[in-house]
Image 1 (cartoon, rainbow, N blue to C red):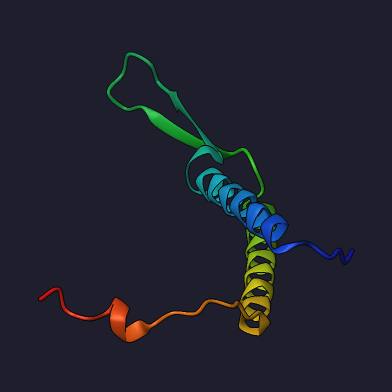
Image 2: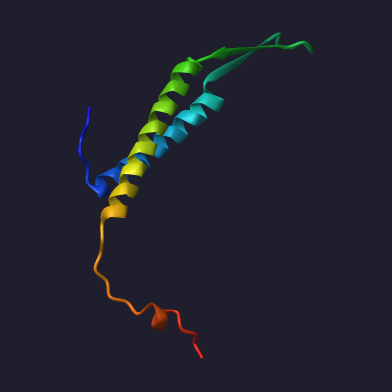
Length: 99
């Protein structure tokens, strides 16, 4: 689905998408497994790691979000490259030494 956004909307969306990507990366790296130990009271405890989420699905979603971030960011930069502002400035005066 294609939707036109203002630059402000796109920037807000980028913030949310980046936050979501970070959440999913944390999920993929840490919370996606559950560890259980067996053999209480003995020196030989067996550790069982059970996946809670399919890593491929999480990775696919992260990649999808990162691709969207790239396209939105590129669109904003392209719009900025075309947009001109009117601002009269004497660069020499602004950058002149204090002395």
